[in-house]
Structure formats: structure tokens, C-alpha cells
Length: 129
Length: 285
Image (cartoon, rainbow over all chains, first blue to last red; front, side, top):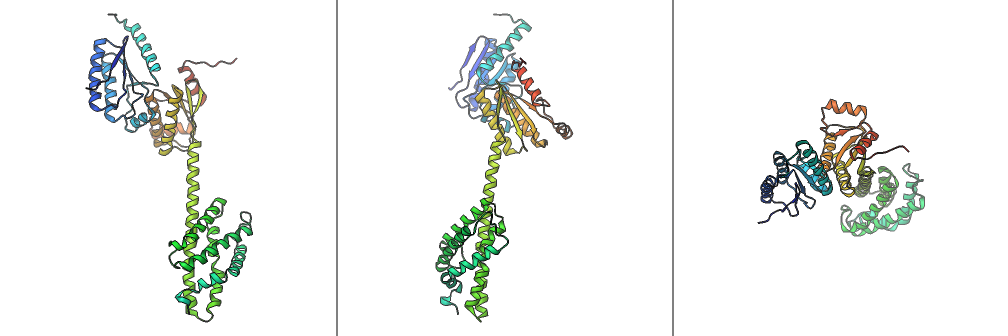
């Protein structure tokens, strides 16, 4: 079955979506990502959608949901590299992905997640395992 | 009385072309719709001559009632050319239509002479000629109008392109000075331009300056918010600046909520905030 790979860098999970998302694939990603967050004790998730050209309302909702679920699991989500056409479509659909952080590219997304995790670390003094 | 069952108009146009042309040009020169500063007599004479030639061809082969037929193709083409060029030159509608209508008087005078005492034949011919010339005149008016509409559409397009420049103010900072009323079509264009530039430059902050927007109603506010939302989805932040006092009042009176969008009174303030957020500083030396 087609799957979207999830990479781990320290405590950040990297997801690069390079194929057209169909509904089942999105749901599989949601399942696997939440499982992975728990397993890896990740504090950040970066989803790169720069090669995604078509987004419908369902995929938009799944992205929103992933962000909400990650937050419940104490991880911050950043969606990076959204194409202008995709952004316009989502806005026209009335989905502004409130609660999802966005960044222009992977570099900026990573910088944000690192900063967030450093702050988090200071606040909670996460025990290292 | 009519030769070959056809109007005397055909004979006149064919046999008395020279005199008809002279009379017609004189008529046009005497009319108060003449625009000597836009077109000289020689040009006018040339156009008239071409038209008469085409007309005589057409009446010979085609019917006098149907100017859409293939026999009238040359006449139509010529009228299109004449009306089109006059629309470009700045003639008014009536000045353009008079070109065809002024042919009536010299033609009628000749028809009267040709018919002599045959009142019925004269009336028939005059009626036929009037209908024909009216059709041609209306056709030239239509072409004129179409040309003018074309000009307006082109200018609108040019305005649309002119009025939505996206400029890079600083590293990571874009500015979009909006001028003129925002409607759906323009918002779409503005949004696309802005997002495209955000991708190209990788800027994290875009300042939308609405100093030149004369009126902000709920619709315009909604368009602005859409643009801001789309930019945010891509990972760039928008600041709206240049809100004039009256506009601030209107926004509040209308109950429009700009949400959590940062707004600043002037572009300078917005720029300062943008520099601060991107961790840059400007210093007087």
C-alpha cells in the first residue's frame, strides 16, 4: 500500500508529501503520524506540501486535524511551502487552517520548531530518555 | 419604370459616381460634424471614393435589403475599417454615422431627377435607399461602439496590471500599495501577484498599504482578509497599513472585524514593525 514516509530528526518529525493526496492516504498519514509522535516523544511536526498542487476540503481538514491532534500530544505542527494556488483554493473554500502554523520553506519551519522546542525545554525541563 | 425591375439607385451609383462623389464630399465638408483637425479633405475624399466604389459593386451583385450577404462583404469591411479608425481618432458616434447618412441628400437629388414625374417610383426608390443607408449607418455605428468597447476593455486590463505592483522594501519585507477600488476580479489578481512574489522572494512579511483605497466596505474588508489568510497559509504574515481616520470609522461602524490582523496607521509604522519582527534594524548614521 502507498504510504507517506515519516522521518525523524532529533525530536522533530519530518513529513514530505510528494504524491497527490487521496482521502485514504491522508487518513493513513494521520494514524501513523499520531502513533509516531507518541513513540518518538516528538515535540514538533513539519509537513512539507510544496509539491502538492491540489488540495480539497477534506485534505484541508485532515491537515487541521493532524495539527490539533499533535497539539494534544504536546507537539507543535508547521505546514511549509504551500503553493499560492493551493492557498487561494483553501481560502475560497473557507478553510484558513486556524491553529496550524505555517512557514514559507523547510528552513524557516525548522527554525521555528527548534525555537519552540528550546523554549519548551526551558519551561518544562523535559527529562531526556 | 424601373430598369430590370431594380432600383434606379443602381444606375446612379454606377454611372454618376464622379458627380455623386463630388456632391457627397461637398456635403460632408459643409456639415457641422466635420472635424478638420482630425481628418483633412483629401483623406475624406479617398474614403468616400472607396466607399462609393464598393457600394456600386455591391448594389450590382447583391440585394438592396440584405447587407449581411456575401456581395456586401467589401462594403462591410470598408465600413469596419473607417468606423474603427474614426473611433481610435476620437470622432463621436454621430460624426461617424454622418459619413454614411450624408450620402442620402446627393443620392435623393439624383433619384428625383432620374424619376422625373413618376412620384410612385420615386417614393419607392427613396424608401429603399433610405432603408439601405440606415442599415449601413447603423452598422458603422455598431462597429464604432465595438471598437470603443475594445479600447475600454484594453484600458481596464492595463489599469489592472498597472495598479497592483508588489515591491520589495527590504530583506524579507514586501509591500503592496493598493490604489483604487477593490472588487473581486482585482482582489484575485492582487492575491495571486502577492502570493507569487512571496514565493519568489521568500519574504516573511507583506505590508498591504490601503492609503489609495477610497472606500472600505464589508466586501472590500472581506477581500483583504482573504488575501491575508492566503498569505498566512503560505507562511507569510500580513500587516495592513495606511488606514485613514474616516476608513477606521467606517470599519467600526460597519462592524467589520479585521480579526487578529496587525493594522498600522502609516506605512512607516508598518515597516518599523516588519523590521522588528524579522530581527532587523535601521540606524541613522
